[in-house]
Image (cartoon, rainbow, N blue to C red; front, side, top):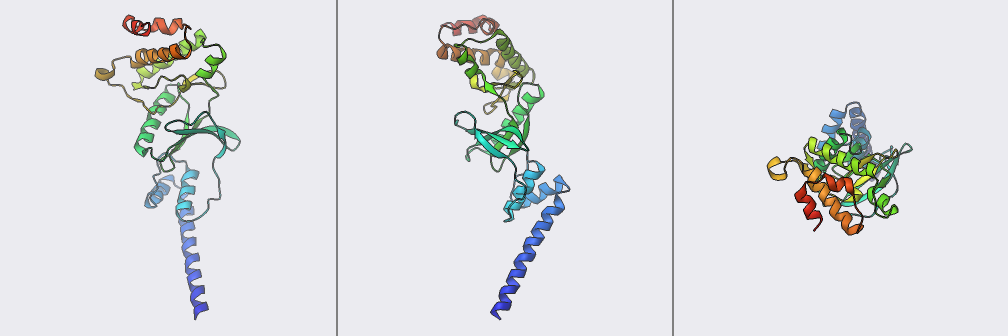
Length: 255
């Protein structure tokens, strides 16, 4: 009787696993159905690719995913307040993975993604491949080097072409009504073909003209960057950036 009972329990477990596997396999043909299936498992499917979503469903069902996703290669830069950035690979191609702290809310991650996507559409920010609100990360196009490191190698000076590129980024941000709000030189990075982009939209928000004015990026972001440069590289001038500021902001810079 005991042996029969154990066999019966084993058969029930096997049939349940088979049912779960079948349900996952069935929904792989439709991302919409897969998202519904994920929500039933308590998974937020927004931003997830089909494979990542399938793997999440399998893990929630007690199974090991057969298809592995991103392989971590190395850390990129120092760990920040919001988390860390890593180089990851998928099918031989490198991406940047921004891994947030567990305490970061899904709403804030989703907002950051939305702001960056606007920047991407404007041609000034890296492309987001996918994001995961459950495991708290964003996968995006990997850039090569940041503006601060480049300036350090030049004794704090900045090429005129890069100063113009910064102003171009700020003009485009103002045009698409996104105020970035984080004028840190490490938030400006170069692509492999030396095109300057802006990253890290964690503090960004939609421009409110009454609150921010018409040109908050061209004015406040430019001033904020120049004030940082003044501390980091004393005595170095950035003529194009400085001359772009209205007189009252130039006076603040020269105090």
